[in-house]
Each structure stands twice: as C-alpha cells, then as structure tokens.
Length: 543
Image 1 (cartoon, one colour):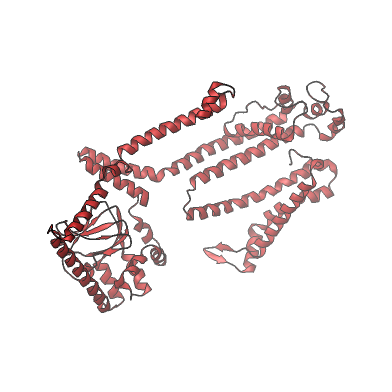
Image 2 (image 1 turned 90 degrees about the vertical axis):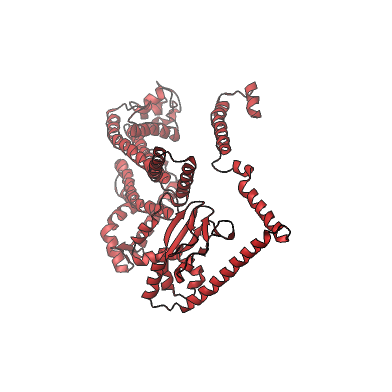
C-alpha cells in the first residue's frame, strides 16, 4: 500500500484493517506485559512482577514502536508536504516480524515431536523469505519511479482521459516520464494508460526476483539515476541472498539424505567385504533383507540404548516405562512387584534383532537370559527340529526357566520372521531383586506352576505325534492335513511371484515406471499442441 496507493486511494476497508491490526498488536502487548510466562535459566517464571520487568527490559520498546499508529498521529500533526514521510512511518510495523521467528521455530518443534519431516518445510520457509524480500524490493522499485514526478502535479491532467500525446496518455506521460515504466509502455509491456495496479506490481516483481536470485535484471531495466542506484543496492543484497540460497538449499537437501547415506555407506562396506571373500548369494540375500528391515524399522540404528542411557535416571525410567515396562507387567512372574521394581527391570532389558531363521536359544544350552518378543514371530520346536510346540507373537515371552532354575533349555526357539527381542539376563535380574530385598518364594511358586504346565503340554504334544505315526488313526489324518496346508502356505509358487523383491515385481515396476514417464511427457504435449478440430485431438480423448 505504501508504494502503490496514495492516502486518497485508501478505502474505508483499508482503514478498518489497519485499526484491527493495531488493536490486535496493542492487546498482544498487554498479554505479554501481564500474563504470558517465560523460561529463564531452565525455570518457568509465572510471577507477574517478574514478567513485567522482563517484558520492559527486552520487548516493550520495539513493540511500542511497532504497535502504536505513529503514521496516524503524524498525519494529524504534520502538514501535507510531509505525506511521503508520514506514509514511511508504516514501515516501523515490520519490526514485529523479527518476533515471529520464535513462533515458527516452536511450530517446527511441535511438528518434529509428531514425526513430521521438517526438511521440506525448512525449504518452504527459506524460499518464502526470499519471495518476501523480493516483494519489498519490487514495491520499492515502483515507489522510486512513482515518487520521481510528484503525484499532485499530474492530478490535473487526469481529465484528458486516455488521449495519446506522444507515447502514452497525458496523465501517464506526466507521471511516468524518464522512468522504467515509460520504457515498459514504449515496448508494449504496459498499456498507454500506465496499466492497473496488478500489472504494475507484476512488472515490478518481475524485476525484483531475478535481480535478487540470479543477479540478472531481465526486460525491466532502471532508467533514472535514482532507479539505477536503487538497482545497485539490491544487486549487492542479491549477491548475499544468492549465496544464502545455494548454501541453505544444499544444506537442506544434504540433510534429507544424511542418515540414509551413512547407512548405505555401511551396507556397501559389508557388501564389498562379502564380494571380496566370495560368500554365497544366499548370504548376500539375507544381508540385504536384514539391512532393509533395519532401515525400515530402526532407521539403520541398532544402538538406541546409547542415547537413552545418556539421559538422567528419571528420564530413562519415564521413557522406558512407555516402551519396555509393558513387557515386564505382562509377565505373570512380576505381578506382585512394585512400580519401582518394574521400572528397574525395564532398564535392564537389552534390545536384540534376529533375522528369519536365526536360532535364538538352543536345546540343551545352559541359558542365562529370558526373552521378551517385542515385534515378530518365533516358534518353539523340539531338539531334532521336527516338532513344533508353540508359535509366539508380539508381547510373548520365553526362556524364563533360565532365571529361576539352573538346568539346560528344554527346547529350541527359532525366528520365523525378523524379530525385535528384549533380553533380561539372570545377573541383572538377581542384582535388582537383592538390592530391594524381594522374597522370591511367591515368584518361584508361580514359575513352578507355569513350568509344570509347559512340561505337561510338551509331553502331550509328543505323545500325540507318536500316535499320529500310525496311519490308521484319525489323528494321523489331521496332522497330515495340517502339514499339507503349511507346505502350501510356505512354498506356494504363486505367492513367491508377488513377494516384494521378486523378479516379477521388479519387471512389473519397470513397466509401470516407463508408462508413467510416457504419460508425464505425452499428456502436457497433447494439451499444449493438439488442435481441438484435428484428428490428433480425437486420439487424445481416446487415450
């Protein structure tokens, strides 16, 4: 408005908007002066007197300058010949823009806490700042041309209408002679009347943005000395902005891929090691599957405990209470334990990742760990791998015998998929219980009950399998039918074709990609170049 509107051209709506904005900023000053708390040295300050002193010392002066309508006061006091100076006082309202960077940072922190990727938003934020500066530069470029010839001297020639004198109407010739707008009118870029406000703004912005970003003036060039000096100033600023654009965009783009690039580098090192030692293709495939799982589920990290353990103890327990303590609570052995014991045991859990087909614990081993299945599927099988006793899913636990009884493991546990498992060692378990002087008798009674139940279940399974070996029994037919069903589910060739990394999926994806590229190239070409009455247009409609 300062560049493109005179005071006489301002409508009542513009004055109402100014009044509302000024009132809003004054009310914001009152809120910050009386109510809005702040953080000082890590402490939340809510005392009203301290809030007042803090606001007076840091923000009051600038807010007062930006919020008080100094232009309106000056207009009532100063004569009309100071109109340009009075209008320039509106620029003081831009001071409040510096206060809003804190709001944007807080918004980004909130989005980051909710899992949003901030890199695209950072890029939009930076480019918006460049466009805003270009807007200021374009408004100033127009204002320099407009203020060259005083508006009052040309107001009397407005009655001549659109009659052409030399290169424009009398009014436009008087107002824009020896300016960049005159050259635009002569070139036919603007109408002889000088053009509407939107046309003039677009031409001004067409000069500003290229000058700031690539230091190229384009088809809008300065004419007068004032315009040339103004252009030199913004060219100097444009060099800095151009360097900032390159640096910030490069930094944002590099941050988009930093984690994935680091992880890809580690994977490439492993692959080069396997190629060097000529390891089998099946092992290559297993490593590739594990790396994809590790990136999709853990962003390539297997040492999340390092960060958690660097936190203060209270924050450690608070974080793990929402992530790992649930496994302790779901285990019946720890039902009678207090919250403090549960938190302490959750701190002892160590994360482990297992691939499909990995043996987590072997039959006959003297185990020292209990396992909690956080994510994945495992099966409990016999020593000869021929009998499946149970299949466990998320939230299950196994290996608890190692914590209470010193005896070999009674079965083997194998991973059926990629598994995230939390491990509790016998040493950590006993240390925590002794530290709190907890009586193990209740826990042992419950364990013995569950342990005996498992023994009876496994014995019954083995007996039924022995009976099923007799082909004449009904149980034999049921077991055979179940085995056939499992074979079909695991080895169905049709299902293998549609697996994520199958050859068919790759070829199908290549075909879809080729057709998508063709569509992206062909459709804009057809829309732009095809005539509505041609045969080619009919082909477009068919497509």
